[in-house]
Image (cartoon, rainbow, N blue to C red):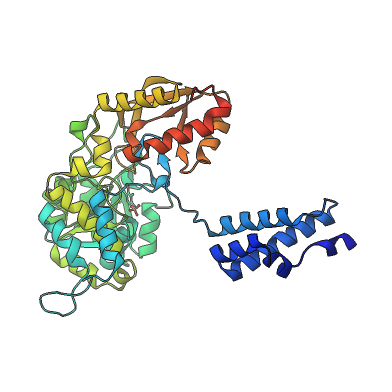
Length: 456
Ligand SMILES: *Cc1c(COP(=O)(O)O)cnc(C)c1O
C-alpha cells in the first residue's frame, strides 16, 4: 500500500510541461478531470498487483482520455457498400449548393420568420413551400422534421378518434420502429383493415366506406415486394371512390421521388406528381431518401387540409429547423433548374454510367496493386425500389480473415464501410464520393496490409 503514496499528486502532474500543454489545448477543468482519472486507473492497477505507473505513463493515459472525451462520435465515413440511400450511414449526402446554403444561413441571422417586404413576422414555411408548389403544382405544402412525423401529424390532426381505412397489403414495418399500425394507434386514429395480406379489391374499400370514415390511407410498401397472387386497385380508383363518399385520401409515399427511376434500369418508383395527378388530397414523403436532401417530412396537397395541419399544435413540435429548410430549398432548386442528375449526389449515383464505374474500380486496383474487378449490384435502399438493383463494377479483394479486415477498415479515419461477398471484401465505386477516393485508398492500404500482400 505504501507504494501508492509514490504516485504523484494532481498538482505535481499539472506542473509538468506536458500537462501544461494539455491545459492549453483542453482547458484546466477537463485536464484536472483527466489527470484524476489517469491516477485512479494507476491506483486500481497497483492494487491488483501491477507495477506503479511512471509519470510519463500517467500523462499518456491523461492524453488518451482527453482525446477520447473531446472527439465527436458522429463522424463522416466512406460508403463503399453500394447502397445509395443507406439509412445507417445517414441517407442522402447533400449537394454542394445545399451545403453552402446551410453554411450561409446558419452562420449568421436569416429571414427565417421575417417578411422582408413588410418588415413584419413571416412564416418559415414560405421558403421551401413555394419551391415545392412550383415543382409539383400542389396547392399547398408543409415541411416537418421527418416523414414519420408527417404521417403522425396527418393522422392526429385529421383522424383522431375517427376511422382510417388501410389495406392489409400495406400494413408495413419499415425499420427503425416505424410500423403503420403503431403510428395509427399513437395518433388516436382507429385502424380499419381491409382486404387480405396479398389481395385487396375496390369492393373492400366500398364496404369500409359504408361506415363514417375520416381518411383513406395508402402506404408505400418500402422494403418488400408483393409477388405472386396479388391485386390492389389503382390509386386513381381508390381516390375516385373515396371522393364519391366525401372522404379524403392520404398517400404515404415513403421515399417519394420527383424523377422517374425507370430510365436508369430500375423499376418504377411511384412519383409525387403521379400521386397528385391521381387526385389524392395529401401526399407525404421523406426529404432524405430519393429526393436527395436533408432529413425532412414533406406534405403536399389541398390547401384546406394543409391549413388544418399547420394550425395543429403538433405541427409546432415537429417543425423543420432552419438548417433543414436551407438545404431543402437548395436541393429543390436543382430540380427546378433541371440539374438534379448532375448536382444531387443520390441522382448522380443512380445515373452513373457503367464505364465510368469500371474505370474508377480499375484505378483503385492499380493504386493498390491488388484485387480483381468483378460485376456486381448496387441498391438504392432507403425504403424505395425493394428488390431492385443497378449493375455495377466492384473491386474484390481476396482476404484471409474478412471479418477482421472489415473491422480494420471501420477503424480508419475516415472509416471505410465495405461489403463481404463470397468471402471477399468488395468495394462499390458508385457510392464513394470522388473527393473521398484518396482517403479511401489510404485507408485500404493501412487497414489491409496485415491481411493482404499489397505492393506500395
Ligand atoms: C421511410 C418511410 C417513412 C418514414 O420516413 P422518415 O423520413 O424516415 O421518418 C414512413 N413511411 C414510409 C412508407 C417510408 O418508407
